[in-house]
Amino acid sequence: MFELRSLAFIPIVTDRFLSVAAPSPLTLPTTTQSILEAWVFATIFIGFIGIIWKRNLMMKILSMDVMSTGVIALYVLVATRGGLLTPIVTGNSASTYADPVPQAVILTAIVIGFSIQALMLVGVMKLSRDNPTLESDEIEQGNTP
Amino acid sequence: MNNVTVVWIALPLFIGFSSYLLPRSNRFLALGMALVSLVYGLFHIVDPTPLTLNLVGNFGVILRVDELSGYFILTNAVVTAAVVLYCWHQNKSKFFYTQTVILHGSVNAVFICADLLSLYVALEVIGVASFLLITYMRSDRAIWVGLRYLFVSNTAMLFYLIGTALVYQANQSFAFTALQTAPTEAIALIFVGLLTKGGIFVSGLWLPLTHSESETPVSALLSGVVVKSGVFPLVRFALMFEEIDPLVRSFGVATALLGVGYAVFEKDTKRMLAFHTVSQLGFVLAAPEVGGFYALTHGLVKSSLFLIAGNLPSRNLKDLKHQPIPRSIWLALAIASFSISGFPLLSGFGAKVLTMKNLLPWQVIAMNIAALGTAVSFAKFIFLPAGGEGKPKAGFWPAMAILLGGLVLANVVYYEAYTLGNVVKPLATIALGWLAYLFIFQKISLKIPRAIERFDHLIGVMSLMLLLLFGMVLA
Image (tube, rainbow over all chains, first blue to last red; front, side):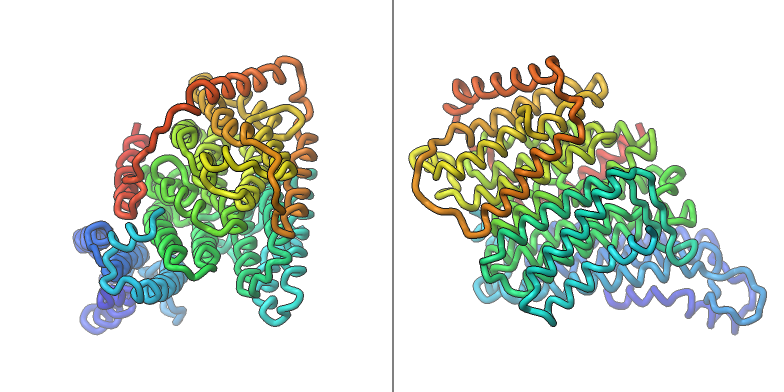
C-alpha cells in the first residue's frame, strides 16, 4: 500500500527516464492511461470491499488506507493528461507539462487522510485494552445499547 | 466586507488554539466567537446582496456569502452560544472549548465556500472535531461510537473526492459552477458523500446511534448544526442547477418519510429526536428555496430538545409516564414540541407554511404525511405528566432563553404566514396527530430491528446508494 502511494511521483520519475532515453513523446499513450486508470479503480474497489469484509478493526482501517491510496493515485493520473514533464519553469518552451493543480490539491487530502488514520489508530489502541482481539462485530455488540 | 469575511473565517481557528494559552477565558472566547458569527449572519440576512470572493488566483478558494448562508450561519451561532452557556458551570476542560470553537469555524466555512475542494477540507475538519467531541468522555462506548462516525464519514468523503477528481478532469476547475458540465458519475459520487455526511435517507442511518449516545451538549451541537453541513451544499446545488433540483427534492421527501416512520415507533427520547432530525432534514431539502429558514428553526428547536432530554429523569418514555417531570422543564419541552409540530405563535409554524407553499405538486401528499408523523411523535412529549421535583443543570435556563427566545423572535422573518387559512391547517394536523397518538400509536409497541444500523451495513449501503444515484442521474 505504501509502494502505491509513491505513484505520486510518477510524473517526476518518468520525466527523468524519458528525457534520457527519448526527449519526446512526453505524454502517456492513451492505452497506458486507460490501463493505469483500471488499476487505480481496482485499488479503490479492493479497499472498499476490504472495509466491509475484514473483521478485524485494524484491518478495516488498513483497507481504508488502500482505498484512499487509490483515490490519491487517481488525482496523479488526472494530472498526467496534458503531459509528463515536471512543471518547473526552466526557460524551455515545452508544452507537455503535467498539470500541477491536482497534485498540489491532493497533498491536502493526503495530510487529512493521514491525520484521520492516526486518530483512528489511537481509538483502536484504547479499545484494544478491553477487546484484545479487535473483532469489530464483538466490539459493536458490546457497545450498542 | 471582503476583509471582514476573511478575518471572520480565520478567527475561530485563532481563538480555538489560543484558548489553550488563556485557559481561564476560554468560555468567554467561545461565546464571543458565537456572537461575532451572530452579527455576521444577521448582516447577510438583512442585506441579501451576494458577496463572492476569489482568493489566491484562478485555482484558489472561492467563497460565496448570500442570504441562504446567512440563515445557516445564524443557526450555527445561536446553537453554539446556547451550548457554551449550557456548559458554563460544568468545568469542561480547555480541550472541549477548543474543539467547540474549531467545529463552529469549520461549519461556518462550509456555509460560505463555493468550490468543491474547500468544501472537502471543511467537511473533514468537521469530522475530526466532531469525533473528538463525541469521544470527550473517553469511555469504551464513546470511543466506538466516535470511531464508527469517523469511519463512515471518511469513507463517504473518499467517494466525494473521486467525484471531485472527475469534475476537475472534465472542466479544469473545482468551482461549484463546473458541475454544470460534469459527467453524470461525478455527480453521483459527490452526492453519495454529501448524503452520507448530511444524514439523509438510508445512508444517514449512522446518525441515530451517534446523536443519541453522545453527551447532551454534544448531541445538541451535532443535531442542531453539524448535520446541516452536509445538507447545505445539496441545497446550494439544487438552487444553482435545474437538473439537480428534482434529485434533491426527491431525497428530501424520502428521508422525511423514513425518519418520521422510525420516530413514531421509538420509545427512547434521544433516539426519537435523532430519527426526527433525519426527517426534518428532508423538509429542508424538499423546498430548497426556503431551506435556510427551515434549517434555522429546526436547529434552534432540536438543540433545545436535546438539552431538555438530557435533564429528564429517564431516557425511556415508558418510565417517564410514571415519573412526573418538573413543571418548568415540562413547559420548555411543550414550547419546543409545539414549535416543531408547527403551532402558530412559534417560528416552526412560519417555516412549515413557507416550505409547504414551495413544494411541487407531487411532493405535497408525502410531506403532509411527514408533518402528521411529526405531530404524532411529539405528542409523546406533550402528554407526559408534569409536577415532579428536581432541578436542571445550572446553565440550562440561559441556554433555553436563547433558543426558545430565538424561536419566538424568528417569527418576524415570515409574519405574512398569519392568515386564517394558514393557521387552520397546522392546527388540524396537530389535532389529527394527537388523536392518532392517543388511539393508535400509544398502544402499539413495535420494535424496529437495528440490523441496518450495523457498521458493515452502513458501509455497504453506500455502494447501493451509489447504484441508485447512477440510475437517478442517468434517468
